[in-house]
Length: 249
Image (cartoon, rainbow, N blue to C red; front, side, top):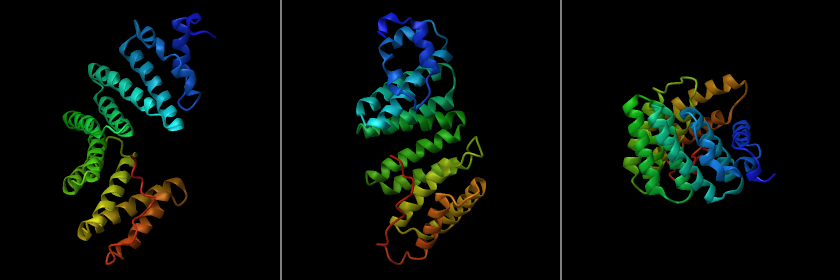
């Protein structure tokens, strides 16, 4: 069907009915009519439409590795960041900044990525959204460590870990695991054994809780057992680190 022969209302219904991971091409092909789709819409509908296109590009980028999809995500998130600020949805705004930062790393723009993460950190701190502050500090910490600013990176990871304990959703401990994994990894590298011991215990206890919830031994518990064993072998600084830590981008 030719794009021009379909009404904007029909396109809007198709975009809104789309699901992440399902025929992303069927959503992206309508992006040329994005401005028409947004015309006359409420802020909430405006955000929902932008979010659908963003999700389609996320699936496309992960499926194809195309950096042009990553750039499209950043442009869409920029529009959402502005809109979410107007709507005073600051947690969503901070998370959108973090998302944009992650995809800027994909295209190799680490400097701008760090700027987005700092903005997200400021938003999280200003409005009391510790989950956003945690996510932003984790990203900034990883960036600092990657660039050789290890002491700064470790401090940022410590801040991320402190924020993870104050997260809004007590049942969502994914970020806590990610921060613990990264912080334990770098502390092994710089041989900070005293700080490691309580963190390894915390990681293991949290992983055991996760396994009980799932009714089976989860990969995090297996990782925690490896880390516990690794802690007893720190006399050899060349022992390989845990390969399955969820480091992310």
